[in-house]
Structures are given as C-alpha cells and as structure tokens.
Image (cartoon, rainbow, N blue to C red; front, side, top):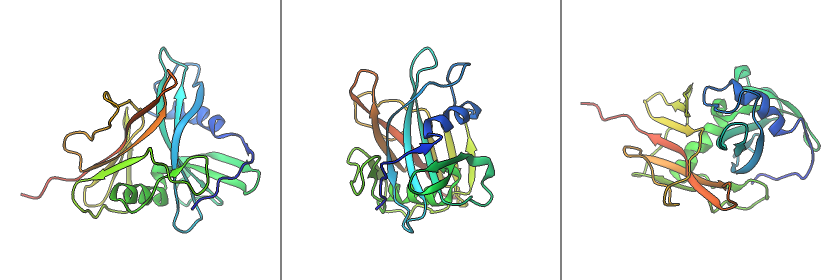
Length: 221
C-alpha cells in the first residue's frame, strides 16, 4: 500500500491546479482564476509501487457559488512518454525529490486501477493516512465483468472526461461533482457500474456523490 509522507511539495498541488484548471473545458470558475481548497478524495495503489495515484476533490470559491471538481492526479519519478499535454508541472517533494504530476485520465496506470476499482479488484485508500482503506468510497458493477484495463481514447467535455476502450466501453470521470439528493449515490440509468465518494460540503457536513460511471456499448444486432 502507498505510504503518505509528511513533508513539503513545492509548488503545492493547489498552486499547480490553479494554473491548470482554467485551461480545462469543464472549468466554471471566475475570470480571475480559481480560489481552491482541498475538501476530499482518495488514493489507489499502483501494484508496482512506482506511481502515486490520487483522486482529489477541490472546492473553487471564485464564482458566484462554490464548485467542486474531481481532479485525478498521478505522481511519477520520471516523465511519462507521450503525455506532455497531460503534464500539470513538476514539483520538488521533500522525501522523493522531483515529481512529474499528470492528469491521471491520461496515465494508463491510474486508468487501469480505476477500472479495477469499478470491478472490485482494487481497494480505495485514505487520502492522507497510510495503509488505511477509505470506507466512504463505494463502487458497483452490473454483472461480473471483466472491465477493460486500457482506455486509450481521452476526450474532455463540459462536465466530464470520457475514456474509451477499444471495444467501445466508456469510463466517464465526472469532473464537476454534485451531491446525491438523498445522500445515497445511484448510477445513472443505463450505466453498467460506478464509483462514488465523499467530500466536505459548505455547511460542514460530508456530501456524497458519483465520481465515475462505466458505460458499456449496446449489444451487436
């Protein structure tokens, strides 16, 4: 399991996100740039122990009302080949040295582990505590799978990022988060699976909502 180091990161994750978020089509913040705070998230383990994987939830208070974004990130000790467009930047970690920080939707290690989470083969980990499962993260899958491990086609939309496998299966990462109306997240009609998680609501309670959906192609006629 991943080890959480109590150390510094320069620049910080929020500083990197402040420059990157306004370049995304799903950013809905104010014109002067985001005002961010970290309000939730979880981690997934890389089976090889080489890549840090974090699904971070940030709150942006730059607009008329708070907006909550899901920002999956990966942390690598060397550049990821072919992923320059997905690089947020580099940062100096107080223990691990220089880290290359990527939008995890473009990182095949993170995408494979998200698929494994939907299928029930990966266990979500607490964002800030080592060796501790995150019991607020839930998942569901209709049937037994399997879920593809590779989703090479990546496309951003106004509210989500769509990852598409060669067989047409889609992992939809919901970038703008909304709390479930009754506090119990339910997948959208037609979804074959989902991941849900929690974050700090403006009133100090914990909100819960969907974070990712699995959509399978219709059967061939």
